[in-house]
Image (tube, rainbow, N blue to C red; front, side, top):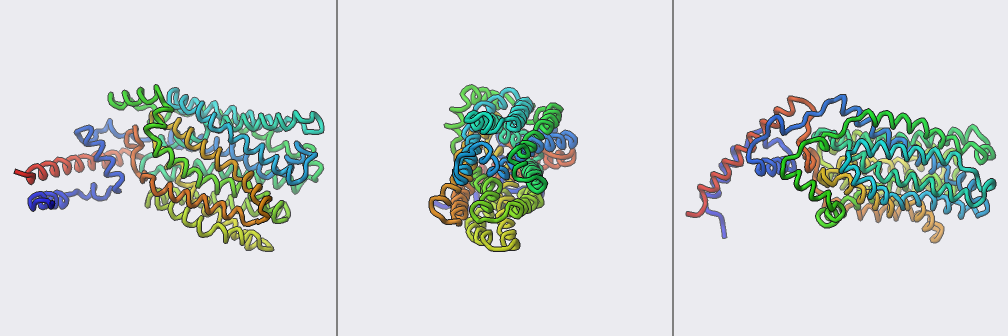
Amino acid sequence: MTESPKRQSGGAAAARQVPQAVAALPQQVRDELVSRLRRAGRPFTKDDVQVVQEPMLKRAVSASALGNCMEWFDFGVYSYLAATIGKVFYPGASDAAQLLASFATFAAAFVVRPLGGLFFGPLGDKLGRQKVLAATMVLMAFGTFLIGFIPDYGTIGIAAPILLLLARMLQGFSTGGEYGGATTFIAEFSPDRRRGFLCSWLDFGTFIGYALGSVLVTVLNIALTDSQMLSWGWRIPFLIAGPLGLIGLYMRLKLEESPAFQQQLDEHDQAVAEREQKHEFRTILRRYWEPLLVCIGLVLLYNVTNYMVTGYLPTYQTEVLGRDGTTSDVLVLVGMVWVVVLITFVGRLSDRIGRRPVYRWAAVGQIVLALPAFLLLRSDGWLLPALGVLVLATLLAGFAAPSAATLPALFPTSVRYAAMGIGFNFSVAAFGGTTPLVTEGLVSATGSNLVPGCYLMVSGLVGLLAVRFMPETAGVPLHGSQPMVSTEQEAKELISASRDLRALQMRTATAEGVAGPG
C-alpha cells in the first residue's frame, strides 16, 4: 500500500524546511536529540546543557592518564623482565618452563580482575567515581611496590613464587576497578564533540607508562651485568612504583566528582537509576546484555593485540626468534613510541568520521596484515623487523584510540561503572591477559613461529563482528547525562539547534496530521 500524495508532499515540504544547523548535525546526534526533545516536550534551556570548565577538564584527563601510566609502567617492567623473573622465582625449571611459569603468574593477575570489577564497579556507581579511583590507585601502587621486596627462591623457597602470585593478584584486583573507572570518569568529563580526542589521552598514558618501564629495564640491562640483574637490579623498577603511586593519589584526591554523577536527574531518570542500582548485576545482564557483548568483543580486539605487542613480543623475539635482548627491547620500544605519536590523532579522527569506521578499518587491517607483520619480524637485521613492529603498533593505535570514548558510551550513567567492570575485565581476563601464555604454549606445541599472527587474525574477525553491532556514539551525549559542551557559545548553538529541531518536529507532526486519512 502506497502513501497518499498529500502525505508525501507534506513530508517533502517538512524535509525542505530543515534548518541548516539541524542538517549539519551528524545523524546519530540528531537521532539522540530528537529522542530527548520528544520526551521533554520542549527545546533545551541553559540548565539542560553542561559547560565543562577547561581547568577542571585538564585535571581530570591528567589524573586519569597518570593512573593508567602507573599501571602500565608496572606492566612494561614485568613484560621486559619475564625471563629474569622466571630465573629468580623458578630457578630449578628449564628455560621454557621458567618462561611459562612467569607468564602464568602474569596471567593470574587477570583472573582476579573481574572480581575487582564486581567489587569496585557498584561502589563507583553509588559512592562516586573519584573516591573509588583514589582507592584503586593506593592498592595498585602497594602491590607493585611489594614485589620489589619479595625475597628470591634461594632465600625462602616456595614461599617466594607464592608471594609473587599474591602481589600480582592484588594488582589485578585493584586494576579491575581502575580502567573501567578511569574511562567512565574521563568520558563523563569530556564534551561530546571532543570525547574521542580527550579520552585517547587515557591510553596515551597507558603507552607512556609502558615505554617508561621498558626504557628503565633496557637501561638496567645495559648498565648491569646478568648476575647483578638477577641479584638486585630487577627490583629497582618495582620500588619506583611507590613514589609514583603517591603522586597519582595526590592528583586524584584533588579531583571533583564527574559532572554526569553530580547532575540532578529528573524524576524519571532518578527512579530508573534507583531501580537499576538496587539489582545492578541482574539489570546489566538482563537489560544491557547486547551492549555488554559488544563491549566484550571490542575489548578482545583491542587487548589481544595490546598484550601480544606489549606482553609477548619482547619475549617472542629473544626466546623464539633468538634475537639479542637489547635489539628486541629497542624494537618494541620504537613501536610504543609510534603508538604514542598516533593515538591522539586517531582519537581526534574518531570524533570527525565516527568510532565505527576507525574500528572497522583497523580490524580489517589486522586480518590482512597480521601474518605479513610476523613474517617481517622473522627477517634478519633490524629494518624489516622494525617495519613489522610498526605495522602492529599502527593497528594497536587504531584500537586503543577510540576505546575509552566508545566503551562507556554503551551504558547509562546509573550502571556505567559496574557494566564496564564486568564487560572490560571479563574480556581482558579471558582473552587479553592470557595472550602471552596461550601464544607461548601454542608456539611450543606447534613449533610454528607464525602462530601469533594467526591468533591476531582470529581476534580481528571477532572484533569485526562486534563493530557490526556497535552503535555510533561520536558526538552523542552519554545516556543518563546532559549534553556536554566546551564553551558558552557551543551551548548557545546547541540550544538554538534544539529549538529548530523541536520546531521541525512540530511542523512534521502537523503536516502528517493534515495529510492523514480523512
